[in-house]
Image (cartoon, rainbow, N blue to C red; front, top):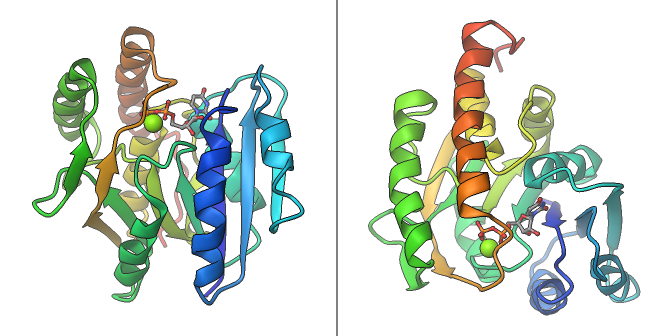
Length: 242
Ligand code: UDP
Ligand code: MG
């Protein structure tokens, strides 16, 4: 198999360099072809310069949003540009360490289309927990997800997900959510399209410097959940069964 790695990055000059320095040797150690796609989400700092410094070390390119559009929009741009047959997206801060990809790749073997990292399975290992307000969000949001949008997935929000490229390119065509609620929509669509999803337990080492504003983005994510439900109700997703 070959792998495209999509990294959305908004004002990540401090976190991205360290992460790329871990991702590249790890990928080099696997026997596969890979490409890294950094999607700069209208950063106002030196994110693009930091990413560009790695171009001579590896197969990396940078896509640029002219203005800040959100994590969901950025991940979608990277996915649509992916050239290889599998695609992973990961947060710039590697709160899920890159070597956890081993476990996700293992999960693909059972003929799953999508393998997602989870922080809330029995064998998940939280080494550094999120700040208290995020732990509260991390408990309430999944309840709302379950009631409003998607059942049967314990952690929809972990920023470390692996897909067959054909599958996810098919899914993102229907994506309407640009910001932090996009994972729920992708998984909602994946279920409606009958793709096989597996959740695997991973490590989480929370990193400082979150780009998520608890009130603004928390409210935004709630509205995004309702949008998934209403889009479905109004027949706005024109899905061909997989
Ligand atoms: N991100 C983005 N656009 C945004 C906000 C965030 O591309 O408008 C990226 C960010 O750079 C990071 C990922 O989304 O790579 C997750 O963000 P963050 O680590 O702040 O989220 P948290 O860990 O707090 O959930
Ligand atoms: Mg983070």
